[in-house]
Amino acid sequence: MSKSKPIYLDYASTTPVDERVAEKMLEYMTFNNNFGNAASRSHSFGWQADEAVELARSHVANLVNCDPREIVWTSGATEADNLAIKGIANFYKTKGKHIITSKIEHKAVLDPCRQLERHGFDVTYLEPNEGGVITPDAVKEVIREDTILVSIMHINNELGTINDIASIGKLTRDNGIFFHVDAAQSTGKVNIDLATLKVDLMSFSAHKTYGPKGVGALFVRRKPRVRIEAQIHGGGHERGMRSGTLATHQIVGMGEAFRLAKEEMKNDSEKVSEFHEYFLEEVKKIDEIYINGDLQNKVPNILNVSFNFIEGESLIMGLKDIAVSSGSACTSASLEPSYVLRALGRKDELAHSSIRFSFGRFTTKEDVRNTLELLSNVVDRLRELSPLWEMHLDGIDLDTVEWQAH
Image (cartoon, rainbow, N blue to C red):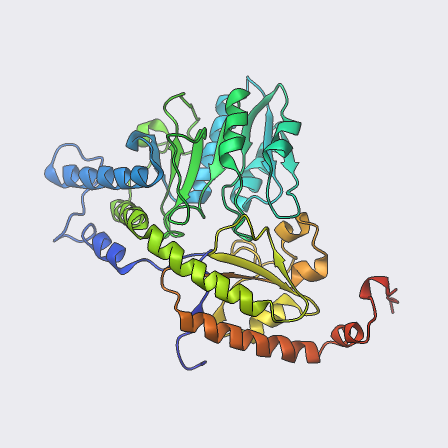
C-alpha cells in the first residue's frame, strides 16, 4: 500500500479544492482572463472583478440563507473569529466586559478571548458535558448583567458534536447579548438557516468546504443591527469592516465551493454517513476502544476514537500511509494531550491515544476498508509491545497501581 498514494482521512483539517472550483478560480488570475481589482471603479476590469465578488457573496449567502450584504470577506475563519470577538468587545465595551465561551472552542476563539482578558475583559470558559456538548442551560447559568458576547461553536472540530445554537441564540437574544458562532466545520455538512437562527455573527472557512485556503467570511447581522470595530484598517473595504484588496480568485473559489456545497450536501452526507456507520461497526471489534463525543448528536464526517494502552503518536507512525490526526491540525504539532478530550474528563492516557478520522467527498469505500485492516494490525502489534496491555490482560486494574519513581 505504501507505493500507492496515501489514504486521506483528515478532511476536518482541510479538504482538497474541488476540480470545478479550481477551474473557476483560474478564470480570475491571468492577463487573458479577468485579473482586475474589485475596488477599481473606473474601468471594465474592475467592474468585472466586482461582479464576480458579488456573485460569490450571493453564493455564500444562499448556502446559509442570509442577505448577501451581511457577508464580509476575510482571510479565513481564524480572522473571522478574531474580527467577531474583538470587534464586538471593543465596540460595546462601555456596555459590559464579560464574555462567555467554552473550553472546547477552536484556538481561533480561545486565543482572542485570552488576549481580551489581558485588556481587562472577564471571560467565562464553560465545561462541556461528557458527550462534548455545551448545553443552553450551561450558558444560562453564567449570564451576568455585564455579559456582552457569547461565542460557542456549531460543530466541534475534534469530536464532530453539534451544539444547539438555536436554543442558545434564543437565550442570548432574550437577554440582549450578542451571539457569535464558529461554523467552520458546518458548511456543506448541516443545514444553516440564518433567517430563523438568532445568531448575530457566524464565521466560515472555504478550505473546510472544498474551496481554497486563505479565504473565509464573517456573517454580520443587519437586523437587529450588529456593529463591530474593524481590526484591519486601510481603505475601508467591506463597508469599513475589513480593509484590504479583495483576492478575487480566492473569493470566486469560496463562492463556487459554497454553491456546490448546497447542490452536493445530500449526496455527500449520505455517502459519508455510510462510511461512518461501517467504520464504527468495524472499529468496535477492537478491544478497549472508546468513542469520544456523543454518537447521538454529531456529524458523521468526524469520528474520534481513543485506543487504550497505545500512544497516539506511535499509532499515527504505524498508520504512516494514512493521513489522520491526533487532536486538531492547529494544535497537533504539540505533544500535549488534546485539551478538548481533557475537558471531557478523559484520562491523559486516553486523551493521548486518540485519533480523529474524518471522511469527505473524495473518500472511497476501499479507503475505509484498507484503513480498518491496517488499523487492526497496528493496534495488535503495538499492544504486543506494551507491558501495560499485558498487565491489563492479567486482570490488573492499572488505576490502582502505585508507580515508583526511580
